[in-house]
Length: 380
Image (cartoon, rainbow, N blue to C red; front, top):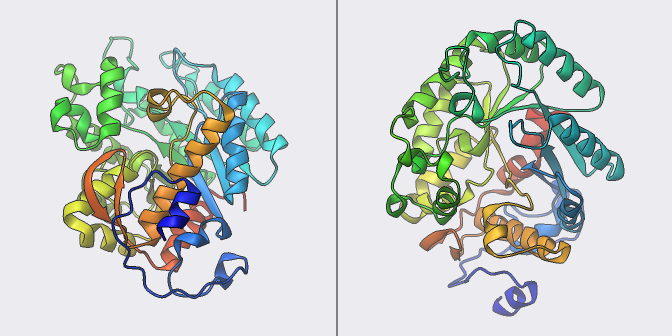
């Protein structure tokens, strides 16, 4: 087992192995792979979808090439930011990738907040979204700048439950278009650096002080962002909503479960939050395991993979070869966590924890079937 890990080049310290006997087969598709559980070596045999990535420049095609090698498909997500690449350019590039890599890439569109305070803003947004769907978009993204940066004519923060969003969200609900929402932020953002639970959050906060809520006590509380998100869902019960990043409830599978119980049309993706599940598994392995069993139809695998992600920047990875290696290692680490019960260490979590060894049927859902269900149009 150790020799195999060395050959794979996986930067995970394997301390022990308690794998159950597995039936091995090279047959495809997923439903003909034998046994109740997958093995670590089944990784490339199983169809998978990374349902949260950001492919914005040519260097990002390295991720697509590695995805093809590792049997992944990808959903690249457009994001509106007043200081970022215009959404029209993001969309054009996403469409270019969809055409260049048929069956491997799909894209989610977004909408501009630039003219939010103007009378015709809603009509402008819906026209843009209609055009996006005509061009092949499969979902819509709303980002955390709603509630953190967007302001009304009176210079007051605008939150996602504001009535001016109702027309847009109603349009999505009527047309059965999923909304992917990064609303609020992880709970660690309201804590001092030395109290944060995972390295990824510490690194991001240290590099983005303007978004580090602990440094801005005048801003709303963590709980307030959950409150307005829930109010938006209360107003739009038919809206199919995917809470990005474990729905900002990454710190507690118990609390996340309560929210999923309350909102049957809500699912979550795991983008850049698998480390929080691993952190909880250190002291509450059974709780994390049982969460996946109970909510196996509501969880989508995702990584938030992008060339300017904090771990990539901190490791000074700048080449296509380096990006491919990084993506492969991240995907393998996560696969090991979900499919084996081995003791592990990973870069973003201090200490040791055991893998969840989820049943094959659950793994198929979180890696593939749930994306197909919640975001129709993602690559098959």
